[in-house]
Amino acid sequence: MSLSDDAVARAADVLTRARLDAVAMAEIPADCRPDSLAEAYAVQAAVHTNLTAAGWGSISGHKIGCTTTVMQEYLKIDAPCAGGVFEKSVRLGEGHYDLATMCRPGVECEIAVRLAADLPGRDGGHSHDTVSPAVAAAMASIELVDDRWQDFTVQPMTSLLADEFFGAGCVLGDGVTDWRELDLAAIAGRMTINGNEVGAGVGGDILGHPLNALVWLADLRAARGQSLRAGEFVTLGSLVQTVWIDEGDEVIAEIDGLGRAVLRL
Image 1: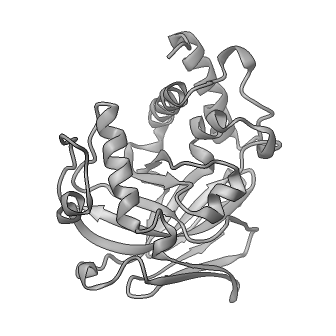
Image 2: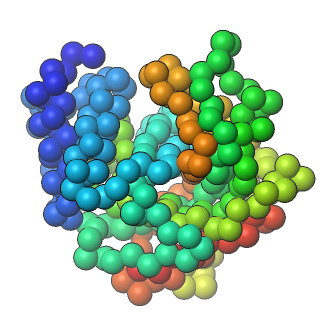
């Protein structure tokens, strides 16, 4: 990593202010803009520290983005990316969020899992067989995102990653503990806004199988000297393209066998 600690801190300050003030950014200044994945994750971690200090609480879960073709094409990012989710931004079952705290909110329909055991690194990396025993429950979820850029389409991927590609919160549905009886690759999901379907997909759209995303994240964090922890949740990627919403909208994500989640703005 070539960014100095000072540059990482300055980039994190830009991203932090955008979240706290709900004011869209033009860009991260060139003299502190991350150019590599390592630099982007370092800036992201500094933003987490800043926001925790500002009263947002700790990171209670993780998000994985760009795990489906529809999202990779939309964001022009051809590989998965990871981010954190603050505990104060999480809602259970039904979630209400205030438009005034965001720049341009949007929603995504996701499969999420909650862990019952740690997933530290392992020789040779993880597989379905090694991550599956750690999953206590699977559920439908809605990821809340916020476009904090004046024009996100001109931002480099590393800037989007440093800002954890719009992450703003999530609604988690009721956990299904007998999820192993389901074919996660075949289950279908859909999202409606004010009763109108806006997108649909199947579990296999997520890297071929939803657990592939969990394997990817466990290995990524191990490579960075970190572990996934018991009690944390992970949203595995959106089955539909991001849909931007407005005040008064009601969003419902339903996934066969995994229930539903509801978000109101």
